[in-house]
Image (cartoon, rainbow over all chains, first blue to last red; front, side, top):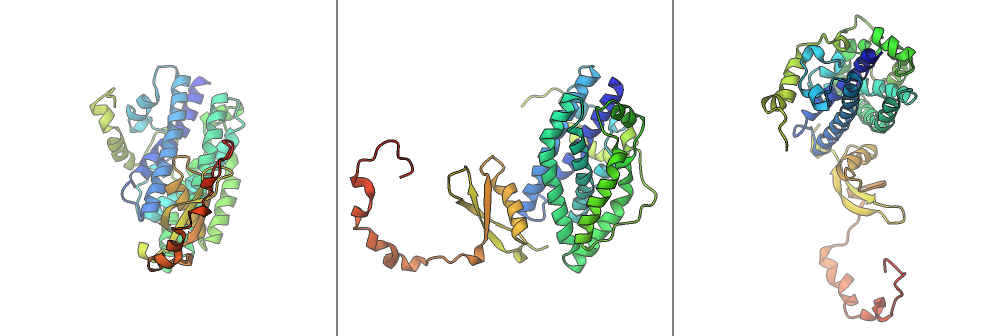
Length: 250
Length: 95
């Protein structure tokens, strides 16, 4: 049970950490000043969530690893984030599409985790859901504006959503770890979130005059530690300072 | 997505219940809803506010600096309009 719970919490924490790192890459590169601040605000929210989940994961594991050890001293195969979130930022539309697809999932996940019988998980979910509610609003509003904007913005955000669609299936793939944790009331079986996710995403896409891509073959593996080549570069940038100067202090 | 195409909005934040909205700055946004969200991100990061107003800057009619004398100078020698001639009890705030 402890092993499954550790993995389960690690997955949620790694999702927040990796997307937080990706959005942080926009710092100083946003299309306009206001959006630059918005993306990095969201990044900091996500890193805050990652800190809470990774700290708790370390406590569950009981081997003395804290948030920093887990974030900065694991290699790619030990990360448990879904593949969607490690995909490169691309253009602004790619970044918005990636956040949009994840934010709708994260909202439903945290909403259900409010009822977790593990006090720590329910408490972190309660804190995080306010942030995620705003993230979902931010990315959805942008999908609507880009989709229902100019012909070029419409085509580009549609392409972004089409390209990322094959990474959405992994969010709802339940494996043994999900089943064990859900059966104990500690977590949620992600496949139970799929219908609501699809309905909510469809409503935004409709308003944005965008097509929902057909479900075809779906990528998977991130939750089990089998990643795309992108994560190595991401981790190199994220981890090189703490690995060069272990235990450095401000 | 050229910034020059986005209109300018003036942002007003109310910091606490009971106080009035106060002008804090301006920003660019494509529409009112986006202006609210941008204002949230740009101006309320440090717990500055609990309510946001945004107003299209183009909708604000401003007095002209050239009219300074006719508008404001006549008040200069009418100090009796200030309530400073009265002793106010300490319990009165914001006067």
